[in-house]
Length: 275
Length: 163
Ligand code: SF4
Image (cartoon, each protein chain N blue to C red):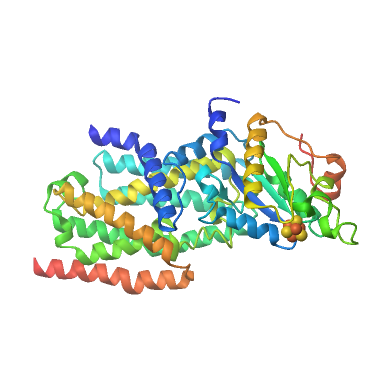
């Protein structure tokens, strides 16, 4: 029951997380930063703008991104497999890619291609991580994982890799290739405006919840450890975001496939042998 | 202005466009975004995308090459929107007045709501101008605005007038 409420409230909580993030970012740069409620003010303002559509499929895919993200969270919290939640997250990102590549703007198409690069670099890892959770707890259900002993003790390398995968999923600085704000001004979301952009903006907040919930799962039955891990991951990602410049997309894919995925696989293999 | 309109003033997103000035004004804008003045406190973001921006901040005299781009940026911004002209150049050409390549001010191309005087305007003046722009923006509605002799302009740009 409590998880259902959590899933329903996910956009609100995600909005607060986003507000905190903007505040933390501003403090790191020595500024005051916007108020905590800023994402909700943005939400209200974007809903009040005149809707300008390119074509209906494009607008629909923007809303689809939001709906599919939220649906992935529901799948996760209503006690289904983690794997299915991961696949629904793929569906959400695919909606964004289809929408972005259906318009004639070259920036948008470029952003869509780069978003696919993001996907091929983090999705295999997500599947591996779910497999690792299965090895530790013997179940694909998040409730069993939360009841088992903290997986971080047995999966330190997977956690380490996941820390570096988070910037790819949330499009943070060393890997914010798809939405390069200086070059392809937002990438896949460039052509969205008003209420449709709002859908994508809110979908991002839900993605925050989705990602940080996976971090929380590493704590297992020790909820305090889980919370500490979430706060640590949040601060780490923000500091990384503020202190690094953007990389080439080839480097991102290479880094993911040559370093992170073998690292996680090594951890899983050692764990399976040791059992 | 509906339920959501009340919060409009709390998140003005700025699109900044330089139509050929000397960059003096642009540096002031960057100073406003930097830690000392920090206009992100008021929710203002510097968006590079006209489709998601609310305030069009124009600096510099409008050179003939930039004219159409400025029009396009104005047309691509969804209403409600406001235009702020910053600096002496944007008012009537400033030191570039009556040169062979300029159009003498933003007002000759698109309607302007707020003028910020000075060369270059101080950051305080810029913040004042943005605050005034936000007040004007609050009173605007979602209806389509037409700029000066839009029919001609649409024809010249080759855009179909859809309504
Ligand atoms: S108003 Fe002055 S400072 Fe601003 S662009 Fe023109 S010449 Fe430069």
